[in-house]
Length: 307
Image (cartoon, rainbow, N blue to C red; front, side, top):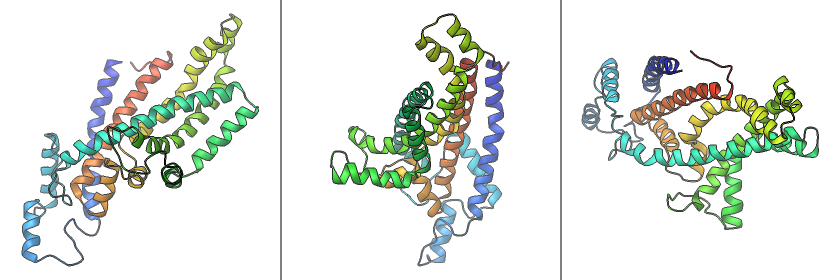
């Protein structure tokens, strides 16, 4: 297992390098620049700005400079928020996105697993149909529809929760964004767990466990559900990375200062370093969580051996 982990981490280096390279050159091929305004700047001022941010150097030189700074943990200055560096912006925004995503992921895993297992144990009953119907509705309803509805209903009409904004000290501000982020994932996980649990309950090792007279809670909780979690675990890898690095729609609608909003603002304003920093963080999260998923496979299914 250790050999496999080290090999995966070593293979992640060229993957991240390819992602950085493609993003670096693609964003610079897009029309416009970070200092383009409706009223053009004086040529001398523009030249000074480009020199200050090393934009007057050849593109290959800018690329090598960026890689050198990145190896030292420096994501560079923000072009649109000129009083801040990208590191300073992420120091504020990333913990917010991680907290929001962690709560949404935990909610989705617990609620989705419970609903999926419950539906599987009540297959072809009203409970099963209700869970499948709600899951289908949750998957097909986009987040940009759910978020305003929740904000309007619970924040404006009922007034029991804040309609927007964020406070690290007041959990009331967390409820609506977390629910909005978690609902689609609850639906997907419930569908995956339901299908896998039905299949696992019909497998030979579960039949053997039933034949030995083991209690139902042991048969379902230890044997069937453990095998049924494999499809959900596969889905959680990229999903966890996406949730923990912020949701553009949710953070924009609720006015949450996470890195999802930074990515949109950076792309619209051609803030090269801000977009690059967001891509690097998301890529690292995806690689790490995919590795965690692979390791979880070996724990859930003893037949899986990576060494």
